[in-house]
Image (tube, rainbow, N blue to C red; front, side, top):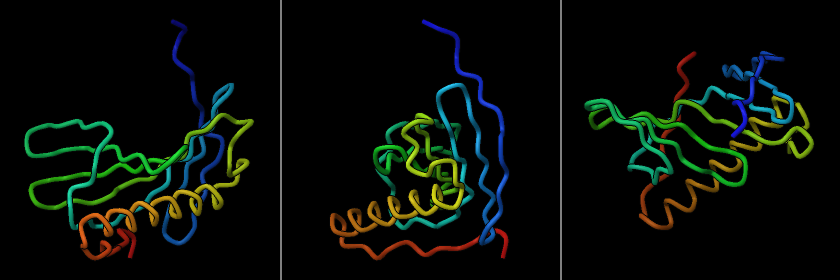
Length: 130
């Protein structure tokens, strides 16, 4: 097993009250996108980290995007979106705005699928910078 990839910040971008960090390694590019949204129901998590009443939940949104949700007590919210892809197959081609749009589209599809399953309303959005 090789050593872990080293990522470095190559760009910090701001738009619509969101910060997007772009990190790159030798072969991979990672976008970390600020996104804050309340959730009405518990999402299906691919990985969970728990500490007491606090739970971090990774939600796979599709091929390259995931959301990070935080649950404390009865409050559930998405706090971040991420896009991780090989540099040569990056759907955003290094553009932070396109990465954000791509993951938001994947998140919208996730919400539509969740609401079909549960019959619940879409979550209400909010922005921590407002």
